[in-house]
Length: 113
Image (cartoon, rainbow, N blue to C red; front, side, top):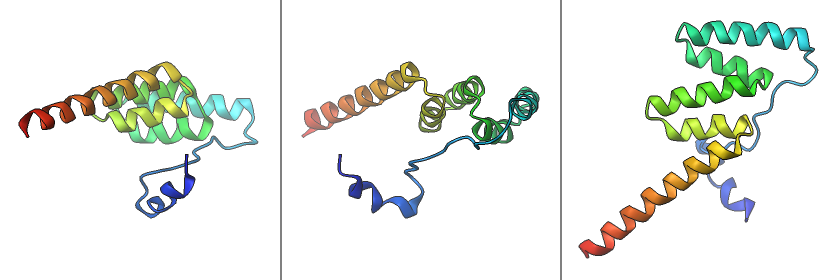
């Protein structure tokens, strides 16, 4: 794939190539932050919990955030969370659903012409 294709859209903030957890954080710090992230998630403070889970790389938390995004009708944000959590199955499922929807739209457009 031609990476230059994506460079022309980088200023729009649509494509992010890296979103890695902070390195050098010890396991006690991560555990403390993850517990706090879980508390915030349970209180409905999803965005703050997401930021914590992204910082620590807590995949279970990222998956729960992704599921919440799906419930709220934000599949693109959900896909990002699943990708950050390295959940290939959920990513594949969302991409297949998107491809199916696009295919249906194209078929409808062709039939209307």
